Image 1 (cartoon, rainbow, N blue to C red):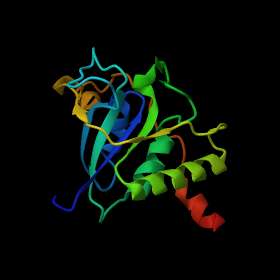
Image 2: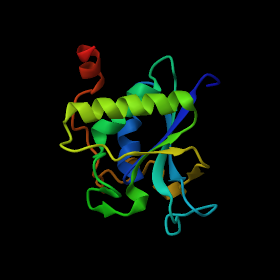
Image 3: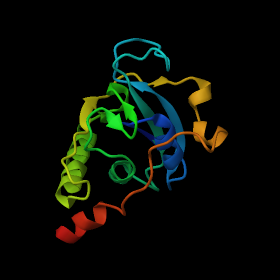
Length: 170
């Protein structure tokens, strides 16, 4: 696992995002938590300004940051500000937590590809925020939809990859 990397994203309720990402090729671990907010040691009931996000551990020999973002933009609506499905508020914002210049460049490229595709019918409002402490959520929120298969989610795979279109356009 020493060559594994981590990516940090938020796109609405963390339960559904984690459930879909867990089965992706190259994803070796998922954790749900809080990021980008005002308090230390946030909890589900007290996380002002934090997004409900996920920490993805991935094997770069099997997937990469670009492919992770491609899937991210296929499973949540990146054109709504502070909202996914019935969930509303800054906790449910669409955000990529950027760790370095390479991730910043890739994120901007993928956002441009998604915007050019027109599939969402509006412009991406996903924010690029600098990486900040990722606070792991309480144990009962980890693997929530595995524990409660009929639990709430507003995430689903809506489109095929955006990246094929970008390659074809070159």
